[in-house]
Image (cartoon, rainbow, N blue to C red; front, side, top):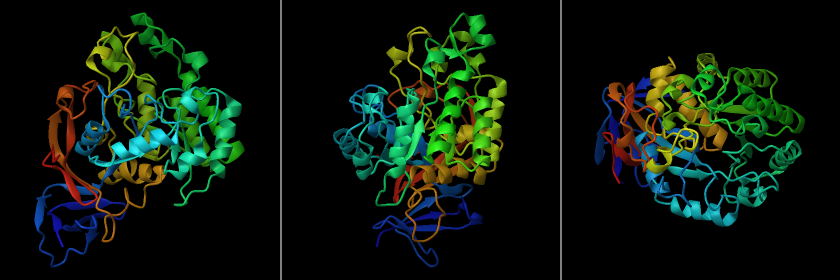
Length: 431
């Protein structure tokens, strides 16, 4: 039996914090009892914390269709360097991930990835908001999350039907089917390229009001109450949205939510230089909104940190602000930004980056759970003392559109173990 040991680390998971060496049986990829075992290979975890590998509910891998910006291989390498052992890929590919053929293609391309790729699929065919995708067929292939991400589903009746359809599906693993919504009422947001407020007025740029997000949050909470369907609200960005989710949870509704690192650490003032790297949808909001997002993450209103990793080629992001595509990369900086900006304990950050997102995505059997013998070894080893400066051009992503280039942060991933295999050692990918 070939074995791998992690020596000298402090284990931090849902069971608490404890000093422990870990040993992995690499044939099965599972943790085994460490007492008295001399391993074939050892990794130094001294001075570090060993945590469940992170799970990202919101990643754009661009393949198929836009491989110049990202591929499944490059995106998974970037994810592994950020401590992620599973990511949910978004369906706004070309062709759209709305059929069995494309889902199977994504799964085949992901076979040798450095983390688990869990494809989501579109709610509607072509993400055009007109006809429902064959969710039953796609759920049978393993899809557990459906989203028209990049476009909010505008038709109220169609969203109701989608929730009822999803709620009726029964899958082998017993997981719920989740509709993941990009909350944006297009009639209000159309033409807006940043948050509508003081900065958009000063810069002479058309804005998107907070109400464009909040109207759809309100509607989907109401439809969840009506149908009993599970709704996951993507990249919340406004104080009003956070408060509505807080009330929905108090009412016992099956509603979950995520927020991005850029929405808890940057404001619309970052757009003052007209640099398109700060253009994103939903847009960067105000100081009040940023503090509301942080509070929502701290008190459990917002369940997960998700990156909305959205790579774009340099040519695309060098267009004028109003013409450039929205989006930012973020897989390799998510943990450090959460640790630097949220003021939370590592255990609480594990909840936001691993435990909760694994549960929402239906991956708790192999990701995000306690670090105990018998579990698959999907782990990240993090150095909480390392201070470093983000270099957007030095990531494994094929794109470099990071809004955090030059920012000083604390906390870095040293090693990542995926299904018992070390895919990152001392901050470098092994393949």
